[in-house]
Length: 480
Image (cartoon, rainbow, N blue to C red):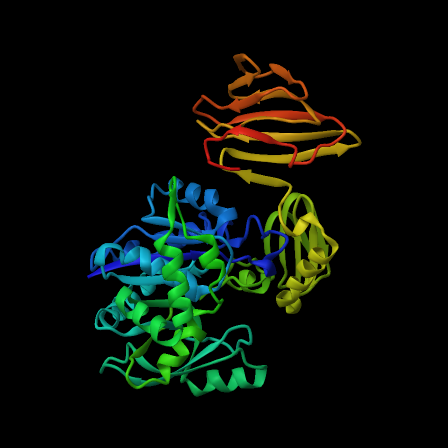
């Protein structure tokens, strides 16, 4: 039996602002481990390789994040079977359908394991064992999900109502129904009853099973995805479904589009496998506090933090000393350009701050001060009238586009590594403590020919310094 992991990496993670931003959301952050959440997800089936053949993953992500996905896979030396770019988010049902069409190319019918890219599992061995249980049912044509055994009443998750056992061991159960996020009293009833599980959003089924189900219950999604896939085009390492066809697809989740209907359809089999693997969706700062290591006062302190007479607080400091005094159940998150302070009980409401930023047209909801590009990153250091200073890091073998600017000149000062500079008709190398000047309107390019990161300071000057003052003539990453 063959499993093809399908990783959905299109989430926004707004409740983890200011660490998570629209252009660099939580799945690309190192939360709950030394690797990012996406990388942890890509490794999650490592323990299963002895009992089933596991294909390279198919990853579905947003256009904006394509180079982040590719780079984080490269760091693990994983070559995805495909990286599918959604022109816009349409929910998990269309994403899984597009992935199924890729997995089933050429008549193949592997078992797909759909996993969100932004979850944590502290016990991957337990997850592997649950997958082995689910694999038997999925191979036999069932639609399988994984229900987390609840350890507390939780109002932030949907629940699955479990039915009769499917085997004598009780390792899997029929699905009796899905229920929405409950109020506190209903959540307590669910946990006390012992028949409800948290809905993890992880699903497993054969390609043929899913395509039959989505065609049966949501023919509109099936047909739109089939149209988008039939005219998809390869763009380097990425697969681009037809944008117009995909944008015409209705949005819906796997739960609403199929699973809830299967649970009520006697002709279809829907199975839930109980999961006790230290699962968390890391959906809010309170969730990250719960899964992190605490000090003797229950605090989680990351970075340069001073906590005095504080209990059960979550404090992250990225750039400077952050001190809390006499606080209880507090969240304090410091980044280079924004600080969040809130009661831990209001962690689910951080999205309200992001909504406010959007209404105000503020860039802090979109990007950090450090902005990532396929060639490396840049970070704003200072800015004023007619000038801007950036710290630029170009990874080994990385190169910026061949470009020019109508309104700004640039000064480059190398502080580490070696730069290859194209300036008009010239091409030359710069090493540490050397510099050059790019006049307005001159064609130029910056490259790193070395084996260590190239770091330099860029001083821009001119009447307009916006990022849209770039005219690209050639680009190794096929950007417009």
